[in-house]
Amino acid sequence: MVVAASLLGDLVSVLDSYRGRDRVIRTLCYGCQLAGGVLARKGPRESEMGRRLLAVSAQLSHCRTVLRLFDDLAMLAYSRQYGLGAKEEDAIVRCVSVLNNLADQLYYPCEHLAWAADADIIRTNSHKWWTLSTAFWGLSLVLGIIRSLRILFQLRRKMRSYTGEASEQIQKEMDAQVKSEVLSILSSMADLSNAVHWLPPGFLWAGQFPPWVVGLMGTISSLIGIYQTSVGAGSGTV
Image (cartoon, rainbow, N blue to C red; front, side, top):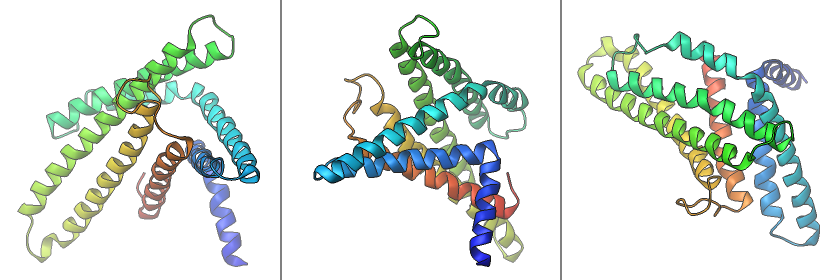
C-alpha cells in the first residue's frame, strides 16, 4: 500500500511538470504505435485492436505537436543563455552545440507552419514544412551525436591522466558521464532512424519502416530519456 502510494505520488509529480508530462505522452504514443503495429499484422480481432491503438498514438502525437506551439520562447531563452558557448573548453563542442541550438530553434516555426496549414489556418503546402521541420530535427540529432562522440573522446583522454586512489571519485564521475553520453547517442540514433523514415521517399530508408518499427525506435528513445531523467533527479542534477 505504501509502495503504491509512493509510485502514485511520483507519477503525479512527473505529470505536474511540462517536460515530465511530455515524456509520459511520448512514451505512450510510441508504445501504442509499437503494440498497434504488431497487432495490426495478426488476425481480425487483433487487427482491430491494433487499428485503435494506432489511432490513439496519432492523437497523442497531435497533442504533442500542439503543446510544442509554446516551446519557441523556452528554446530561445536557452539559446541566448548558452550564447556562443564561452564556458565550453573545447572549440568543436562549442561550435557543434551552437549549430545544434540553431537547428532546434528553426525546427519549431517550420512545424508550427505545417500544423497551421493542416488546420486550414493558413494557405500553404504543409508537406514542405513538415519535411523541413523533420530535416532540422534530423540535423539536430546528427549534431547531438557528434557532440557526444567528441565529449566521449575527451573523457577517454582525461581518464588516462588520472591515476591513484585520490582520483577514485573523479573516475566515478567520469564513468557516469560516459554512460550518459553513450545513452544519449543510442537515443539520438533511434530518433534519427525515425527522422529519416519521415523524409520524402528516395532518401536512404525514408518511408520504409512499418508502424511497429517506428514505435520500437521511439519507445527505445523515450525509455532512455525517462531513465536519464530519473537518474538525474536521483543524483540531484538537472
